[in-house]
Amino acid sequence: MAKVSACNIEAERMTKAGEAGNVGMRRKQPRSLTVPIIPAQQQIPGSKETSLAPRHETRSRVTIEMQADRRRLNAPAGGTAPPVFSFAGNEGLAKRPIRARKPDEHRKIFLRTGVVPSASGSAYYEIPPQGTQLKEGSLVPTSSSLKVMCTVHGPRPLPRNASFSPNLLLSTHVKFAPFATRQRRGYVRDASERDLGVHLDTALRGVIIGERWPKSGCEVVITVLEGEEDAWWGDRRGEEKSGGCGMMSVLAGCITVASAALVDAGIDCVDLVSGGVSAVVRDRESKLEQTVLDPSPAEHDVRAACVVAYLQSRDEVTEMWMKGDVGAETEALVDHAVKAAVMTRTVLAEAIKEAVELKLGEAVESVNGALKGGKGKGKDVDMTG
Figure 1 (tube, one colour):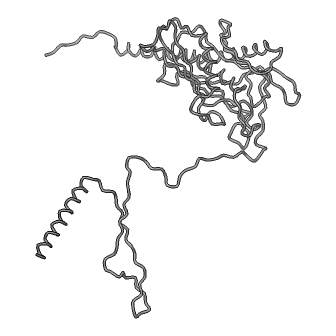
Figure 2: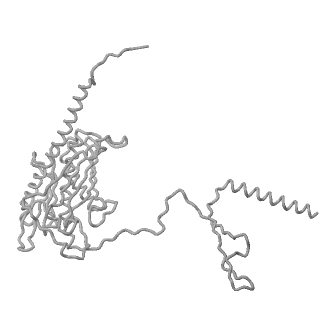
Figure 3: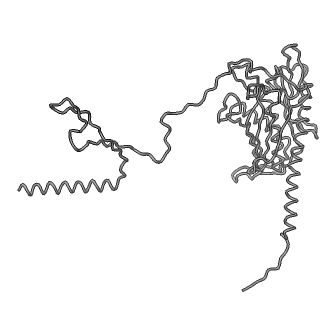
């Protein structure tokens, strides 16, 4: 009977071992790490010497289960922290820039079209830092520059469920890049960006011939890569404000670059529209006020400013935004803004002319190559078989 019971116990053990093996085959086993346990020093009885030999010949081992997740990338164990930049302690390097231009002189402008091949039309507008803004011993200019990118998508048909529109539906979208200003911008448009979009929409509606594109839509998207500040950054020490003269310079750049992008997209317009800015500034030493073109907020103490969208051939103003206490010099301030817009239009016309000549040259070369290679001519085909 003892032998029979022992056989039954052994059979039950084998059955349980087989079931455990089947379960293990169905379920993925976690990774395991075997760590040997090193025994402590032992003292041999009757002797003062110590021995590192274990009490038993078989070493004990501990199995630690480690869950491995191969579906995602785990973060570093130590963690990361963004760098923090402190204000320069040497006050001699942070000096307010001084305007070296004449009151009626505009800053240099860089403008190029066709920079985004995937869009119907695109343009890039930049006012680089002036030579006097770079100080010795510092790689950072004392005042910001202006860099604007514009893309035009359309005209394209509206959805089927949209109501009929006899004119082109224009939508404008202005967004600052998060790194465009010293104070980091958010990813959602704020009130100032929506305000810029409304001003830009008003300036472009008086230029586009919408009757030629019924039941169509066009989207103008502007990304401000670097925007001008409203004041010198050394005066605020972290206090930021928006909606001043720097925002007007951004709007003037948006109007000019949008006009170039619309022409690059082949949308019919009555004329080229350009933006210009003028301001009434006060001298810090003499306390005298004067009107200047294309003001840089870091160089002046701005009392009032005005931006216009101007059509030179039709002598029309499609948009005007004025801010500040102008007094009796309202007409003079607007005239100076129009003069700045005329100067900007010169660069705009040259950039568009250069782009058109480049496209025509490529078209002529393609036609000549096709004629030279015999493309487009009828050829005899030998039928065989």
